[in-house]
Amino acid sequence: MSRELQPLGNRELCFAIFGAGFWSRFQLAAWQELENVRCVAIYNRTRTKAESLAQRFGQPRVYDDPEDLLLHERVDFIDIITDVDSHVPLVLLAARYKIPVICQKPMAPSLAAARKMVQKCQRAGVPLFIHENFRWQTPIRQLKRVLDDGQIGKPFRARIDMISGFPVFQNQPFLRELDQFILTDLGTHTLDVARFLFGEAKSLCCHTQKIHKDIQGEDVATVMLEMGLGTTVLVEMAYAENHLERECFPQTLVFVEGDKGSVELAPDYRIRVTTKHGTHARRYPPPRYAWADPAYDVVHASIVPCHANLLAALRGQGKAETTGEDNLRTLGLVFAAYDSAKASRLVHLSDSPI
Ligand code: 89V
Image 1 (cartoon, protein in one colour):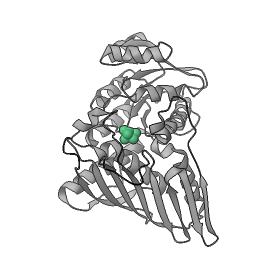
Image 2: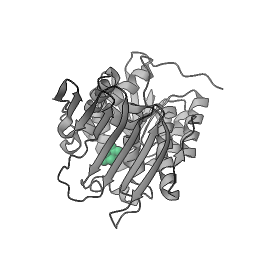
Image 3: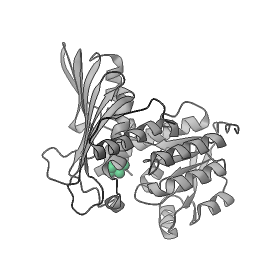
């Protein structure tokens, strides 16, 4: 067993971005909201894409070979924002070079691959964090405060929805090609929100559908979870690109029933708490950043506190919420949902993620 790397402390931290696709420009802009941290190099398979990203962001050096970058640059950590299939080799490369690494969700294309990433990083003593940002959305943090305050008592049932008619494939065309689509792309987020709000699940069952004719994977999924603390949680997601009266992409909506009241996260970031004292409603909108695409506002804004949490952990100033090990549990739900949908059965979840 090798020793853990030491925390990086307060000094300026230099990092490299691996991947220069659609999401990288927002993730990089969000890093610039934080102090004392600087991107010094960008790797992308297609060099011209790395060059155009570098031009927008103060000219970090560019590479089309990730190992070449690590041989020539002194970086304190790596932020991987590539497609899922490259996550395993890139994370293992970081572990080999003993460089702390943040990896985009979904962590890996299978649970076995994700376990391998976690184990290799643990053995190398290298921190592995997953960039899982939905739980950092302003209204979702507020909803969690309401639950923790005990205002609605013990939650016995909840619904978490992200049902959207948004043309998601326009900006992220590769999503069309995924054999496993909505549960890996969006389920990683919504099932992580379920864990964040209600703890670990004991069992689940899932049904999936494909509404688009011209995509590989499923674009609609419905998951019912039985949580260890006794809450039944229904998670509904859809990218059917149909017409909806209440389209509010990319807002996640939540409704929780407790034994003393209820709380709703409604469209437009409105939180409504109903108890015997009546209903109180207030908006909790995300901060607006000039670089964020207004069509993705609440999601883009949540990248900043997610980065801040991971950065503090790298500095040794707090615990990361979404470590690789933690995220194995979220990914465990995603793949258990596929198993359940395939076999039309209830799946029991094991207590240990590794
Ligand atoms: O945040 C994401 O993972 C995006 C989206 C919200 C569009 O699904 O791919």
